[in-house]
Image (cartoon, rainbow, N blue to C red; front, side, top):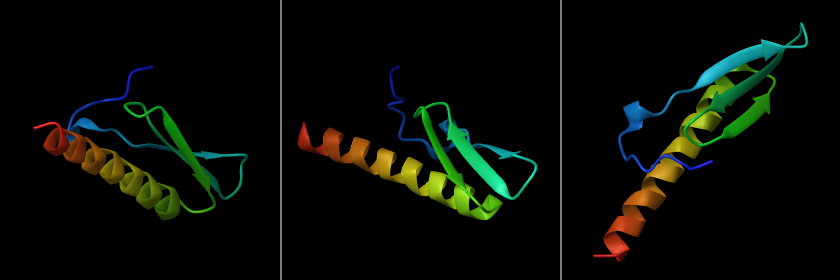
Length: 67
């Protein structure tokens, strides 16, 4: 799987699902192929947003370093 190389935050999706008929949540970002599990909706959403921002920042750093 190839990771997205977009630095536009709006090019990334966050899909959140509740599972096990309980307070278990999972967020998934298809563009990163990453899943995060947790016990609260906001927890997994915020964790995924942070991972996306880390990815974007690393792309920006790579672009700056290669110039």
